[in-house]
Image 1 (cartoon, helix red, strand yellow):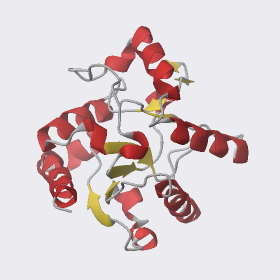
Image 2 (cartoon, one colour):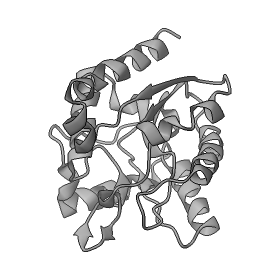
Image 3 (cartoon, one colour):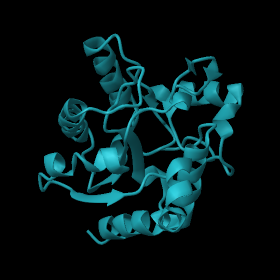
Length: 210
């Protein structure tokens, strides 16, 4: 898989040309099955908004799945007048994505080893997360992992994603929890927020030892 040079700085998808270049990569073999997966979600839930997976990540070749909570505004091509990327990506133009970009590098995790997604994969107009959404999201995540033959670990990122831990403890992959790298968490738990790369690095080291 040769997709060109990875961005050296965060927020690269603020550039319209970068977004268009990223969209052209959606037909690459490692990402095509996940693009089809998103198409299936759209077909089953036409009223929701689903981002694409980032083709600069590992796609179906990834060994670590980082399962966040719910799509943020910059994963949308456009939401509430804000221009986003249409991808769930560490390169999005927002502080959470910037933290993910930085933390992944601090953790020493190769980008091609990872894939990012959300427990609740579609945006339904509210940040609230119900118990039903958690249950349905966990079932959907288990369908997703069937497309990831090299998967060895899932990291649940954020308290709402962590609620699905008992539902995802199926023994097929290792499972760990992490704080969410959002500005809100940084404001209330700055010391633990700064320790997120250590948690992610531990998950990667466990995968690397297999």
